[in-house]
Image 1 (cartoon, rainbow, N blue to C red):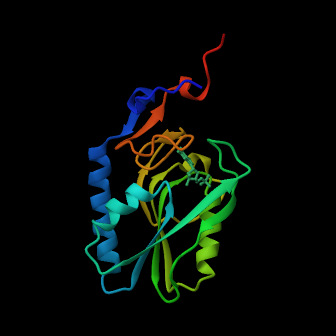
Image 2 (image 1 turned 180 degrees about the vertical axis):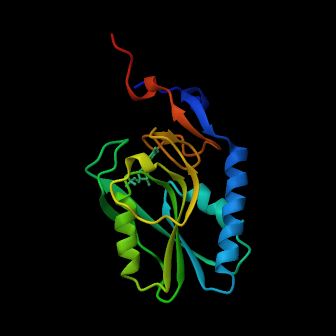
Length: 189
Ligand code: 5GP
C-alpha cells in the first residue's frame, strides 16, 4: 500500500470543501433548533467518524441540549465495506428515557449500522428518535430507514476526511475527499 506522510497528497478529488461543510452544518443546526425548541433534546453521536460533525453541529444549535457518545465497531466486513454486524465498544453514559433523541451520524451507506443503532436506542424508551447524517449514499442502501436531516447526498464512492477514515487515517482532514486509487492498491508490477 502506498501512503505518503502528506495526507493531502493521497486525495484524488475534494468532494466537499471545508466551507461547504460549514455552511450546510449551520443550515442543519438552524433547522434542528427550530424543530426542537422547548423540547428535551439529546444529541447522540457515534465515534469515531461523527466526532467533527457532532462538534460543529452542536455549536449551531442554540438550545439547552445534552450530548452523549457511543462507539461501535462493525466486524466481519472489510476496510471499505460494512457488514452490519455491530459491536458496542462504548455505551451511552446516561439514560435517554423520555428524551427527544437526535442520532448524529457521519455517513449512511448500506444503512445496516444505523438500523442496528436505531433498534438499540428505541429499546431505551426515548420520547422520540430522529436521525441526522452529514453524508448519505442512497445508491447502496440495503435497509430503508427514514433519515430526517441529511447534509449531502453523495455518489457511491468511498470517502475520507472530516472524521471519516481509511485504515484509521485521514480523519483530521478539514474536507471530504476521495482517495487516489493507488492508496488502496499498489500499481501492478
Ligand atoms: P453502513 O452500515 O451504513 O453501510 O455503514 C456505516 C459505516 O460504514 C459508517 O459509519 C462508516 O464508518 C463506514 N462507511 C461507509 N461508507 C464510508 C465511506 O465512504 N468512507 C468511510 N471512511 N467510511 C464509510
